[in-house]
Length: 613
Image (cartoon, rainbow, N blue to C red; front, side, top):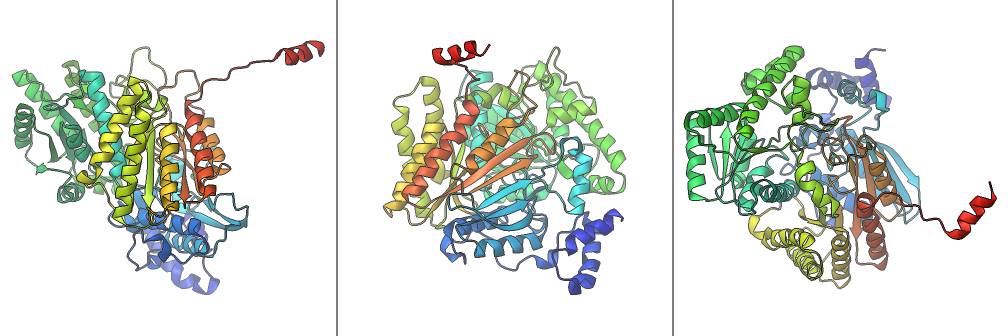
């Protein structure tokens, strides 16, 4: 059987045979045109958004909360390519096709609290009997036998409809729009200033980077909140204009000379600025180098990159030698030539970065596989004497966020299922008050992290971060997360908050992810390529009270490079919800910050062991 015939057969199994003749022709056309069968005819006409939880036709609010989160992930204001069921990252799928969406929503509407929905890479295997204490959904995405977990095999499996790349929070139904990455990027920039520049006063300091898509678009807003000058290159005018209309980009220019002029002016005035350069970041890096060589003036202090290099040859990275249109044509007509051009562009980009770094700029890899792909391209990114995950430049985990993760701080988030902004305002105040109380009795190092997040949450309304659901994110440690969850649950019980609240987190966290080139790149005991932590996290959350759990292959740095898991937990004001939150959140963090095994054998045990010899 040909692969096209197998893909058709896999797609048609969702439908009775008497529909096959009509659907087969449509699906064949989709497969040939798009490389995948999305089943566009089944895309619902309903306005896709997070409706208030009581509007979902369900037998249990736990199921309704999952429906709400799914629809938020596919909201046109939130999702990158909603018609293709892609939430972010270029190929982060919620489902593989629209029939799966409809089936899942049906199953959730019929589910009782003694059933669990089982999900295989977007495919709903069905409802199965379980306990009320069990998760209502168990999700796995991209679980492939390790020897076959390659980029090439992924393309084939996705085309066949048998596996799926769920990124992190796309396939786990927990994305909350770019707010999450805004906050994480702000913390990264602040702590980069402390480490590299010796100050958290970033006025007049310049950060140069690239990408204004679903995740990378947050860089513009984060730079301004952190107080610096953020210059972000983007080749595609559509996301660039979107960020400008959104108010996250203050200025836009396609004139590279004007870009250089505005950088110089902003440095001088020390006014926060987010400047979008409509052009290729390679050209910008080379122009900054030319300016330094000509005048001796280093216009950039900090540098990074957020192009989607986990997907470099299918639109994740656009080479400097080609226009956007030319690149799209070449990747379709001559993939091998396109790969060569991408590698040439990466080598040019790294060459300019290297020279600017030698002049005093500080550069870090943002966990998007930039240095990994640059190494594969033959660019000079090797670290002399470095290990398998070490390069000339550190990842942001190795030098910046790893220390924060080690304290247990990571991206904790919640969604007010009422859809009422007043509930979000109240939960913001609850969270800030909890952190202020805890921070009075902690070390200075921990207090600094609390203070950054208290400032964030107190100013969150001013920064207009909400896109889609009424959601919030902050970084907190184990104690903070548990206390915030319990305080919000009590507010629901007291009817100060009008409806249940879903708590969750990014998979990019303390214990949710094993990723040797990002989250766990600062692990040096030889276990960096092991994935026990992420799998144990998924399993442990499942039987400690999570409403749903997920485990993914891929996310951030790409398919085959990472294992990661996440959860959703519904707080409904009950004692049972408080018990679940306390039990599960304590495990969810401590699994990642645990110390190595210590064996303390009692005297009686030693006696027994001695007698057995």
